[in-house]
Image (cartoon, rainbow, N blue to C red):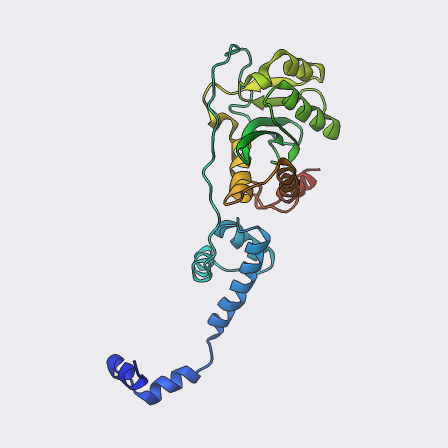
Length: 271
């Protein structure tokens, strides 16, 4: 369609149209362009995982005081959409030890590091088979303390993970370790290890993943950030990506529950 027909359609003169074309961009439009470039850089560094809350916080840290609504508008304009993935949950199964260990953290939140640790196992796909990831997390800082990957889900795998966390952190006696009631956590060998190191064991009720929300949140982030749209050829490639992600998660990923600090930074502030 010609310029003359467009002008006639919208009821403007050709002179007015060309004057509008030559008019410089408004200061706000220029600022939007600059902000969007910064947001795209932050979004790319996050691996495409930051939504509007974390992008808004990242801009604030850099000294840009803008509203969340504006961040959301610019994200839509720039096509920035955080990756989301539904978590694959394993079935709880039936255990012989129901009721053996109470939930010691049901109404308790840690007030310092190494007061409450949480752990769980999740499934991760490599090729046509599953691998099992055990992760130990500090409830206070959300910091990943240790993780172990194995082809068999058993007490040896969970024992290796908790042993690594103990050697790294050397917690005082009285620490609470919280998990579900899987046999790999409540078996006599694992429970004896906790008792030997002066730890109290705590477990969820059967089929209640919300009672271990911190580790569930980590697994959700892991699967959304690392596995969404990815295929790993072998377990070596998977280990490499897990190593990279844990470093990123502990040292660079901002957490809304930590006032948008990273786990490592949050622990430093508590020291």
